[in-house]
Length: 189
Image 1 (tube, one colour):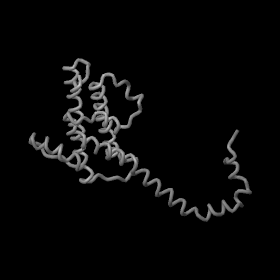
Image 2 (cartoon, rainbow, N blue to C red):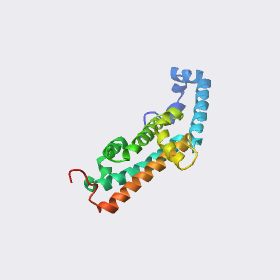
Image 3 (cartoon, rainbow, N blue to C red):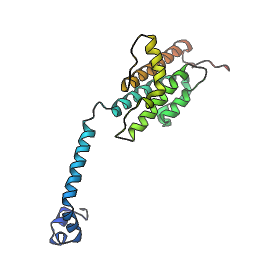
Image 4 (cartoon, rainbow, N blue to C red):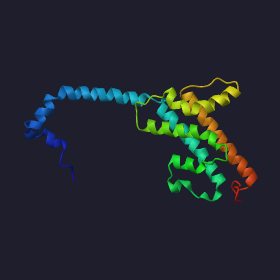
């Protein structure tokens, strides 16, 4: 069954004589201008292939991959986290432990998550130095120690994601190597 509104309805003489048709016809120039404005804006959104949205989302997914690997290693009995449908912030909370140096990563990873959330809900979002300040000091310390220039903008986010992913991978590898699947030792074990 066809929808109640079809092309044949538009072709009927009654529609062309209706008040709706007259209103649409009177507003045709404005509607054409709206369509053109939409097409230009949409083309701008589509042409962004290296914009902050795609880069931050990609970096967020990479860090989340290593965060999950870390969580599985420090708690082998944690089960399938994908079935738990935890948010990124909840996964990060599971990794939160004052007795580990993961605390050094926490501000940068939380900043990455906040940026990802803001970018996911705004097509016009621009990154500022203020937005990136939580990761600036951590990345700056490592780049300064290595004699490398301190990146800015998306480069700073990439450097932070690389450092966070590397640390999470290194911790998981070290725990796996030394704990042999038992997870980390706690004061109660």
